[in-house]
Image (cartoon, rainbow, N blue to C red; front, side, top):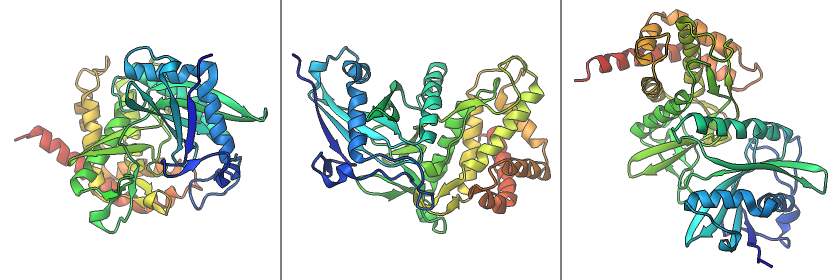
Length: 394
């Protein structure tokens, strides 16, 4: 009989092992990420969590894990090639309790993420997220989102269902948040386990450029499909710094669908395409500036440097998109002209309409509205400056 891999469980690192004899084994997972969130909802013990993760990995003779490992190694890996599997409970998110799965293959450490949903809300997101990621990875070659390797469910004591899926782990990428918006040298803090650090002004601008480029890059200009919802406060983006350069990835795709009136790709009216693109851009510009202080505190609004990055990232994404049949000119040029046809008052009214459409109970709304007047002014100025720079590159 073939020997099965041994499992070892940990909290965030090997300094915190968890065994059946540990006191924490019987403790319950927290059900809320944010300190001001109601703590209602389902929860399970740490022991049940780790046992469920093990059951998922073991299912069908470790099929999902072997598939993922084989893709990493670029050759078939058998179960005999895996001696140990380490499961690290990374954090308690708003929707998932993700784990980092580590094993060794051919002398190299291989890591994956196991997104685990305990709450009904989290389970609902998994049912939408997994097919959305598969769809986007098939339709786009950007590589900004993780690959996924398998989805399933595990029942605890035959009744409590836990949903999960295995995906790509982005090595050396870390969560980041606005930390002290009053201090320009401490705008964004990166949660590197080796030691937290702050981004420079140029790196902060680049962060917003890349985040916007990613979301605009996946926007479908003909079907109006987009990645939504997302929020910086949820840690949806992660960042890696190499020397002074930074690189971003988007680790979740909760939904990918159209928010316009379009059905499929039957309607190719240029006016409809540009109008919907404008609403997408304006909504993106609002959402991109929102966060929570250190990820869990009060709602925060980024300072003006974010606007420059947002505008650059958006037009860079448009410039990379293929021509649309009904629009003869490049989309980025058409949209710049279209945006310039709106007055500041027009755009303010549109932005207010967008804000009014948000959940009125959301703590984001008061922060958005108190910053909206300056936001639209800065947005127009940044778009004009971008247009001038591109018309006169010298």
